[in-house]
Image (cartoon, rainbow over all chains, first blue to last red; front, top):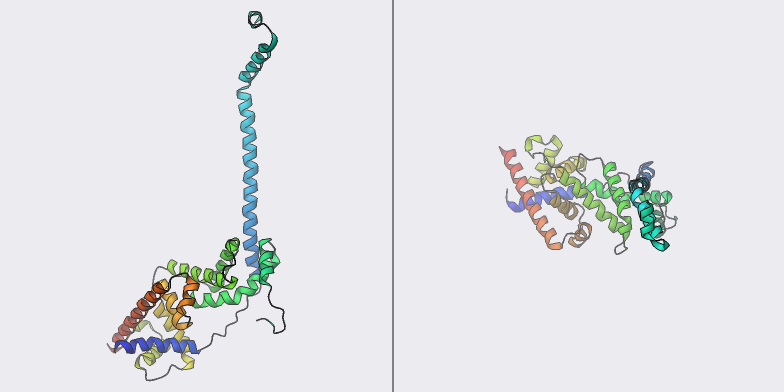
Length: 99
Length: 198
């Protein structure tokens, strides 16, 4: 078989396939659009709710860390406040001697 | 199929509704685009993938990317491109290609192959199913990109420019792919002929 004949074989086969119209229905099956719409829009809502949930967790963690750090450094903070309170008007030597 | 006296589909309004997360608008959009998508799926899907599953994947991709749609091309063209590229991805995912041997052809497929190779008989209309199967078997031997090009060119008779729009490939690349695919098809027919004669 010559090469142009084989090319013709494909052309003839393609022509035979094209000659038969595809008459299968093209309308969406029942419930298809509802399922796809729910999956598409529902998935995004799920993503948003995940984000919200993680955001609240992050806020809670941040609050706990803030409270913990205040508790850990409480003595240092109060000491500093005491020094500041003393520094304004009182005689520092007198205060230190009194302590 | 739309009724002749039905009002034209309000695509812009529907897209606006989808962007507002309106389920009814999303359903209407899917129903409107389903015929377009299913035709592409039926032409290009790998045989092992269910057409409804593939159509669903395409619509989900469409909804995920809908914010990226700028209106530079008509919306159905944009969706067609998503559909074609999704089908190509599915074809690429199907790594194993079945062998193509004369002995594996059904009786009908062998008759069709003989008819087209000898050019003595026309392919009978009742052999259409066998002709479809034979085409599938032949195209399964090509790489996914070549398969898509040859289907669009020879079976759907699209122009090179239309294929470029659908796939995003440049026209020279499409011509190269078509040339390569036809050369491979020619080789397959020669092998088939040799096997038949042996």
